[in-house]
Image 1 (tube, rainbow, N blue to C red):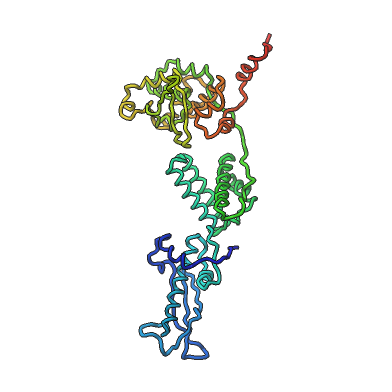
Image 2: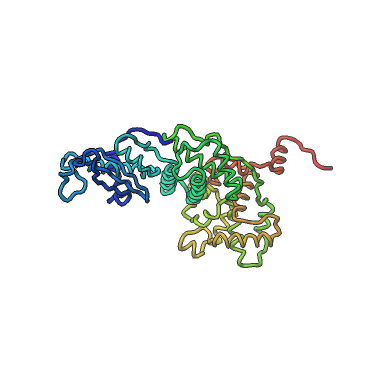
Length: 427
């Protein structure tokens, strides 16, 4: 049910044009005032008003009366009393203001409610409904994206999540749904609908439900509702085995004679990913300006904000990475745009990587993301602290690095334990 409370219609009328840019509100709803003679006294009349909107009409009495014999010249409904004329004009303004208020908060246009609001008998809660709340969340997300707080990929995901949630809301609750209409059980309902009707994976489904939870928390923070219906929802965590090349495979890739010239730049780019942990999109944009030198040690490192999240990556440049960077010292892309390495489209790059992996006889299908994973697992296996690996990858927290890469690795366990204990070897 819509909450009813008192508010100032006059203030809303003044802001209506600014908020919705309405120069002629009559283009939205139509008002027709007309006189109707009173049955008991044909010399008097009452002013009635017909409100029409999208084919719906409602006719009600304004309560203003007049002498039928003294209608103003040229008018079919105005009484001769100037005070009554002023009341009619004021009432007309209030009707448009009430309509505007419903539009601003994206409420259902109810003609009786508009009439009651203009009469001062009822007023809808100015809090937004569910879809309007989502609109406002998108506005804030867009501002974060423009400010660089959110990366393009993350913002693109938000838009995709929003589309699915809107479809679910309209299908199950209608476009006038209130935020309070959402109950805890609807987290499961949404999840099942996304899996069964939209054929989405379980992990992507949980991302969408988690996004809806953030929207509801946004509503709580703005005091539009008192509680987050999805407060107890937690995404299911399913750890996947991290596919990555080991050091021997990386070394084989580095020294292997590639007879296909088209694959040589692909090999060098992939190796650079294995040595730095840069994602494909960051490989496309990283420049020589991103290379800095530590004053105390003279060590070179790449300092770059990740395109996906905006989080900074701090990547020390190992010798092999520097060798690859130097290969392109005279490349036109380096000279003209200072790009560290020339890159082709993501689709072509991954297609060539599959060919390269097949040529090498690897049992892993090579993709650009495998290079990033290889860098992370190599660093961890060499004993680099989790905090440092997190900084290299540009993760927002160490927990993210742990969730993705803290898998059980026999080589690492044996190495760590052999440092403190003598281990038994096969006879």
